[in-house]
Figure 1 (tube, one colour):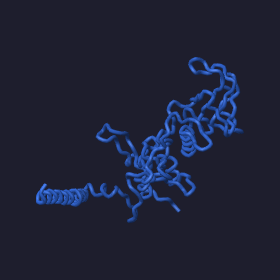
Figure 2 (tube, one colour; figure 1 turned 90 degrees about the vertical axis):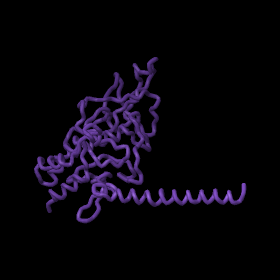
Figure 3 (tube, one colour; figure 1 turned 135 degrees about the horizontal axis):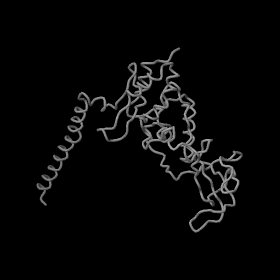
Figure 4 (cartoon, one colour; figure 1 turned 135 degrees about the vertical axis):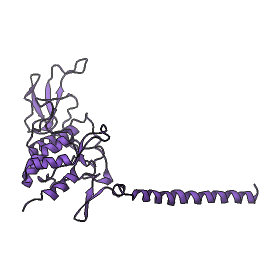
Length: 289
């Protein structure tokens, strides 16, 4: 290849590099930024930030915790959905717990998903004054799971158990069941492995539809969900109204005003933005004294 041809090819490649750099590295970002500043788009492009008294207090797209320094729910605010993103709603640690419906046994190092759900349901029920019971949960708020030990049939069942242990209730706790198939149910001894038995979750005598909604006891996939269901908001109305000294109907009307329907009429579920609702509460019904 002649030197002049080699130089022309490299000059052409250099020109292409400069042109593409200008288009993709300068022109395109500038155009996108300019479009994002158009009316109706600017707030979303800037992060959907919410302000109060001139200070940014959060984003309508990211949830927040409304708790005291000890993690206790503040009575005057609606509570958000649980979060496992970092210490809660951390955009730099957005994630789910990656625990599934088969995670039902607590260990010395971890709490099972079932027990987390049961504990949350009990706490929410007590806080909101509703029935916190739900299927497969003990009255004490842990997973109602038995390890049934004994000879197994061809189908894997244990028809005549020799021992039964409530695996999530550590001694000296009193098991949620007295007997199972004629065998006394024992509490679990810390550090013991009961995997030799057949794990049997016990549904219990509970309402078919729990009073505490699912989004009150399970975290979202991102850990940043800013919304709760209207059902979860509804059971919080009485507490918030009482804490702020206003009629429950007025708080209920405010919840309705901050409830969004399904997108396009059929996508997703109705939802309530917790941060926007709580900011409106502070504006309309400030705490007295």
